[in-house]
Image (cartoon, rainbow, N blue to C red):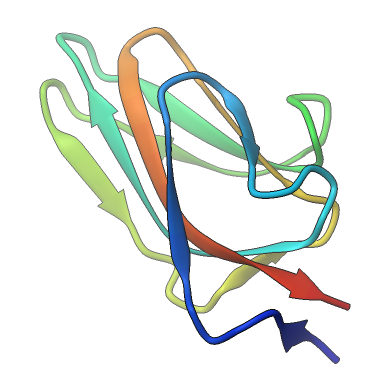
Length: 101
């Protein structure tokens, strides 16, 4: 059974690929926004602490647009949440919270 640290969902803005929240701690992802520049970029979400983790899904960007992705169910990444994106993405915002198992 999962117990949340609190009912609040926080956000984190990433301008480079990296770990969301505390490294290697389970995270529940509620939404993500991917901002692309002059070329459509891709943000990839991994279960783990690096791009060597298990790929869960990708968010494909649109040129000069913010693409909003909302799994809305609190997708759980039990080994931690790592977001990797290419140079065509200027930022990725994630709404998540750390959970206890």
